[in-house]
Image 1 (cartoon, rainbow, N blue to C red):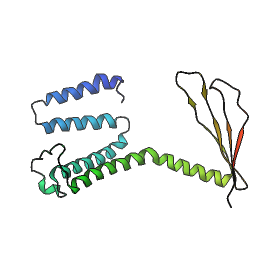
Image 2: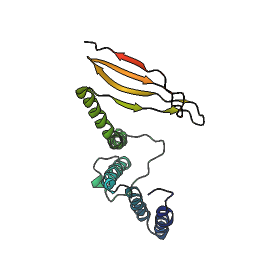
Image 3: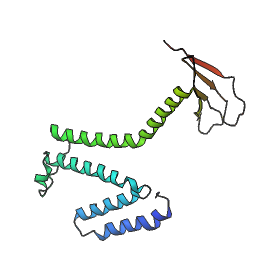
Image 4: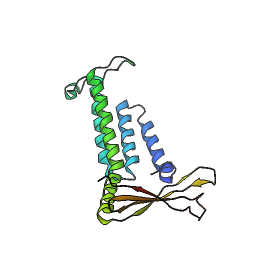
Length: 193
């Protein structure tokens, strides 16, 4: 679901706001819980298989926030105590700093895994394919300046292995609409052995 879709504008947003304001006289926890459910619904709409991941990262962040607020790892002992307010700009203990660091690292690991894992596997497989089969492939990289019709479109042929040497061929065009290419430039990386 995207912000400009009819489902969001005419169904989701009105129901989320209606539910939130219907709980106006309810305790703040209930309104927060409603917003959490609405957030899971919104972000899980496009990929329901990631709801468990969202729940896991949210739970870790919530647990770490309780550790920071109570300044104690044994949060289950303090479950029914009110959460004290932290002084803005006040000193923080080593435990509180460790908890925020743990929360940030867990979120970055999840982000890095889901953003770059397939890229890493595909790159690894491509390198294996090139080294084992002695093949080459074209990789296109466009860097045209916005608003201008003049740009550079280099085309790389990566890599060709010749007797242990790596040969890369580069050709450029003046702009995207130009069908004339420059003469190829061959870069050879000699095998050090």
